[in-house]
Length: 588
Image 1 (cartoon, rainbow, N blue to C red):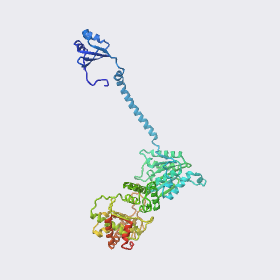
Image 2: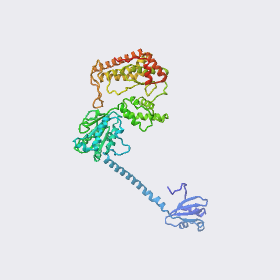
Image 3: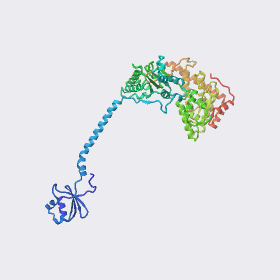
Image 4: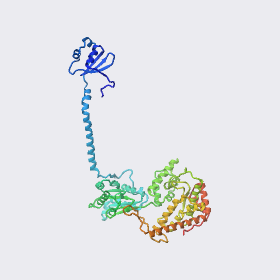
């Protein structure tokens, strides 16, 4: 194919060639082995073949070609090329063999790799964080969590100075379980332990142990512990341990052989026959209620460190840490921001600081201001402002009176938290919102506070009915919150007069297998609970309606101000409300 020409040449027999030579039509003949290449006098070309081992002149003489005609033809002999022989004979023979050889080599190579992977299948994907790294975290970079840091500092101190503890006959806990809601800093605290201890710190997620094949998780557990023990004294951190540590033998949906074997291996590794290894296991979970009892017994996870949501002082410290490195305006009050963020975790506050920096950069500021942080609080809680949303004048007026009703009722009650902001600017799914926050942390809540919150929730509904003699779907979310709050008051905290001090609901989280339902009361009790919830909500609604009707002038004034400005900050609302000189009311 490589040596053939694209133009098909005319093939002549030896007799035709002899006749053409006799007719003086041939200009030249090139001999290459037995192949003949002819060039005619009209510049056309043709090919032919002669007899093997016979001279061309002899062949022409036998065919009666006249010597004088043959002398007119230029005859040349061309040696056969070695490359042509290679391409025409050797390559077509060897190429199929070569291709087959490559196919077999590839198949055997894949088989060898598969066999090698089979031997490494049980190895864990454990990661080592050595001390002295540039980006290591320390306890100083973890705000709040003083008690938790103290518990873990003992672990660090033992790894650094074990003789001090051993001389006193003390035994350091083998396992430390970090328990807390998502975002409270469990993984961050584990990284801080790694940074403070200066010993090898191995990290792995519990989900990496579990595989489709039974036994692989147990093998990876053995490999992870073996790797960490070789580097002892060391720390092994297992994140989200509830992935393999769920309670065994729960019947339905509780687990499978693979996960239970993995858990059994963890139990064996943590309290086996080897008691002299200086390996401390840290684990983190936000679901301690689903962990197996054997995992939590002394000798395994002896110490349970609970990470609470940060209080006001902690939130202020956390904000200061996350704003470090960001240009901020002088006089920025982090305390004010901390007051507006109750229930925010450390991760939420980190997101808040980042959103504030993004907001300041988007509008072309050089520094992050307090306004940016407060705006970001509402963005994180409710979503971005939807100023481009088209709202009719009627809907805008209904929203203004609805939010004014919430704010007025909240400001009129004794045990209600102060109103920090009232807005009719749409955010997320909310057409407007009233921001009511405590000035100090409340770990306990009284019955009067619950009733005040319930009355405040019903304030928007009461305002709509009083002003427009009609109700809208804008109060649907309020009604859901009211029902949940009333159910907690009646059935969880035992604050109902009719039902009495009985807790029908529990705070323990449920999961399939351990507890299908948390309903542990009869249908008759359920009917009483439903009836009492309805009574509590109706009483709160009547109280809210009473406030709205008796203080209608204040309701109208707040609504008009909202329609004019769209947003009322804490100082503006307080000045407007206090101008009416109303007295605080106590809930019934």
